[in-house]
Image (cartoon, rainbow, N blue to C red; front, side, top):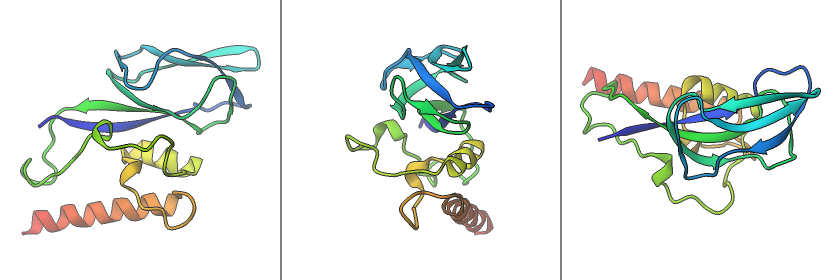
Length: 158
């Protein structure tokens, strides 16, 4: 079974806000590593955002001419991962690519920038995180990771 990880591509650290000045891809398109995905403009400087690895662009979260700030979520990519058996045998794990989920027309959840950054650092698929308020917050991501770690611990002790 091929496993995919949802990668969150966020605005890099910038001193000021930026404007989305170019969209070079569409959702559903497969791209190679270092392929330009979009261009940001900040202080007269063009900043090219490239694919970190080869994969499928699953969702664009911004539109052309939109103003964005450091840490804002730009897009999601599905990256094929090498098999890892951290939950025991492959049959015990039940990972589903976000590309294969039945997504609504509009995003069905809202994520705070700090929660998006944390999820990106930890490789957490935000579609599996339960929001305990209007938006997915850092505490929701932390609770999700704790639950996954407890599940992993229980599988390894039995």
